Length: 105
Image (cartoon, rainbow, N blue to C red; front, top):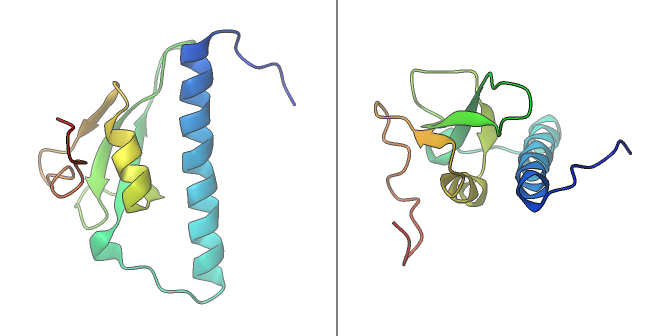
């Protein structure tokens, strides 16, 4: 494996990114195996270009949003993405509705 970042913040960012990647791979495997996914309850993460060394930035969308092209996310993954400081929810589809965990703002 390549060299890991030395600081906690970047390691945590990397861990979130890898969980999202794993979720996308698992969703694709389920799709190819014939499993159905309910797109109405899905979310996507649109990643934006970031300067080298900067934490990833992105927009969280509902899967039914007219803005397409993001990585598919489960409910749990979308809830985790909401905790990331550089992720904004889409104003058009109001992706955060129904995702906030109790006790969080």
